[in-house]
Amino acid sequence: MNNPADRLVDLLDLEQIEVNIFRGRSPQESLQRVFGGQVAGQALVAAGRTTEGDRPVHSLHAYFLRPGRPGVPIVYQVERVRDGRSFTTRRVTAIQQGRTIFNLTASFHQPEQGAFEHQLPPRIEAPAPESLPTVVEEIKEHLGALPEQLERMARRQPFDIRYVDRLRWTAEEIKDAEPRSAVWMRAVGPLGDDPLVHTCALTYASDMTLLDAVRIPVEPLWGPRGFDMASLDHAMWFHRPFRADEWFLYDQESPIATGGRGLARGRIYDIEGRLLVSVVQEGLFRPHTPRPMDTPTPDA
Image (cartoon, rainbow, N blue to C red; front, side, top):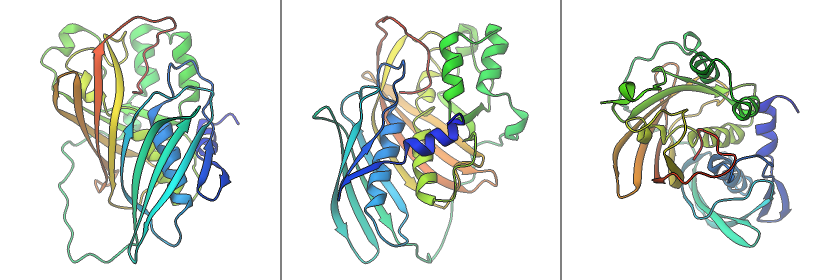
């Protein structure tokens, strides 16, 4: 399975081992902990597999409690909290080696005809995604070639990421930078036609760059890290149907960073400017302690 998009779909295809219990793979990778977007996406799959009828997820709220270990399976236990006439609620606990590492509550809503609609327009007018360089192209332009570990990571990357503003590499470029970031993203290949797969794939992607906005005034996004980062919690609201294998604009900002924590907000638009998803996440930032095999990565 060489296509990273196919690998993502396979990663989200959980094994059901009991009525409300599922098991997900955790790839053996060089990362120090399992990518948080993977756990969130798999937990949402588990929740969705226990619902019936046409009730897409409309919101999720999650906490990252402990780092997951790469290469070790994760068990997802689903509690069927409520099955109402219009709403379904599920609570998911992710367990690895007998310890809870993550929990998520997801709400599903049967589509209704609203009495009214409105949305704020996108904050920026972004260039067309095809006109922008990929992350790999920008790094190669700056460094001349990709470091070996980044080369391996790039080959596994299931999403094409293109920053609307060119990456900053020097202290002068970072000086006075606002805590904002925007990227175009889409899966690198088709994800099939299951709406739940697209929702869970976008949940995976939503954790990849959101904390960039916190770091932008402080350090280059793809240089050596001065801070250890970890996602603390994650919330999403899904407003409209979408496909994660079509371009979407992820506009991100950080209203505050204090006390070792940084808050980031994101708005996800389709290429026509329709607001699809709203995201909020808080991250933990501590002075970096060098470890063997450190590598700059975009995940939390």
